Length: 590
Image (cartoon, helix red, strand yellow):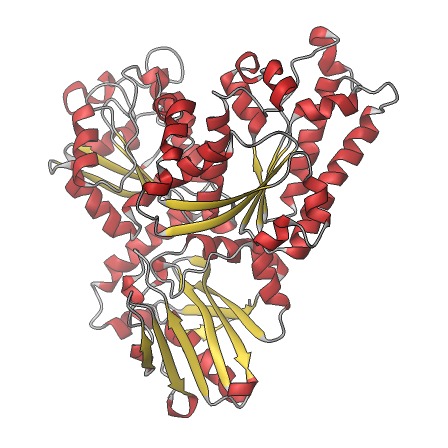
């Protein structure tokens, strides 16, 4: 039985949900609306329980049964009065069946009209709410009226639902704030024979069998948590009996098991999997008990190795315990422990890391390496809500940063080193092209983030179109690499009080200490002066991860005027008292 099966029992989750009201309140809260053409009263409690496992108190608005359009097109509906951050729409193939199987139905027209209806629902929600939408696709039906020939008949229900799912995905690609919940994939994995319970549909209109509902809820929770910035950024992997079979120090290069065919193919598959993760933006790191020369040998000399040394942003091989080494990797990459996954074949090493570095995600790996990739994939650890050009070159950026640190040691001063980098910064107002990356940075930045507002792409677009706001992004490049879009500052003009209010200020930690924040502060204050505003105000809202910027505004001469009981603070600066500070970067075109 897998980890997910042990954790996703319906009865256990229902029992957890009943204890929620007496439990200590969660620090994090979200408001989520659930709309469906299936009954959801059995779904909502387990959804709340799964959010609670993530430390989130989910306040859920449950829309009336099969009233999606009534809720969406009525501006006075419960949906809009509730003002959710997230709107989840679950559609059932059972409800679709009754419409499709009418005698006069034309399959192509059905796909067009149904997909257009779903798209209009998204647009209606976004015209009234700056919410992220999580839209399900449809589970393929079990009826195959033509048998295996169904796939070749465009008028068949099976082929039509498949075409509709493709159309929904295609329409969602152009809408950054519409995310997909792939219930078809869940049903396929669990098996349609287990998924469909027609007696429960007939009597109660349940989306699926009760034992399958937790898997749908788990998928929704993972999507929502990813949209709130909880994502895996790094996979830390062992070497011996994890990336290859055998022990390189004992078995030598010829003795380890690794091959595209036959013995060792399980490890070849594992490396293919990790390389694909790296290509989509997950950083790879090695943590091995080995002599460094032995650890590097297969990467440098084995002809069938898929992964090479340059695929890893950090490579640690020594005889220290792995908890110590993972802490070193965390400091090197400047990410949180909860952004890291540790893969190791040894139960001892897995338990050691769980005990000593509790934030790191440590999945159980099966005894048989042939099942490694399946077991990891089943856990769906790498949920994301976006993919950008910066993601694709993330490993290169970390490697360039390591080069910078090595070079810095050879300079007499930090100033001399910064001048040598030939830094070029481009600052511009939000634009449609950069909105996906802007929203991604809003969702994922934790440490250098003054207010940690998690703004969706729709909300970022609203800022872009608001004349009272100046929403800025910054891109940075130097002689070693192009960092891409690395910082966001949004300010709002308040003419009645002669004030420019800083609403958001966040930056990728990869570029700390370069002077980006100084360059941007110069621009913010200059903007206030040009508008004739006497002061700039700002806010710091503490989180578990942003203590590093607690006194950020103090270093620029701001005065703290209010401090709350939980460390939140209001800051104030007279524009006349600010003198622009030098930086070592040139202005470039966006």
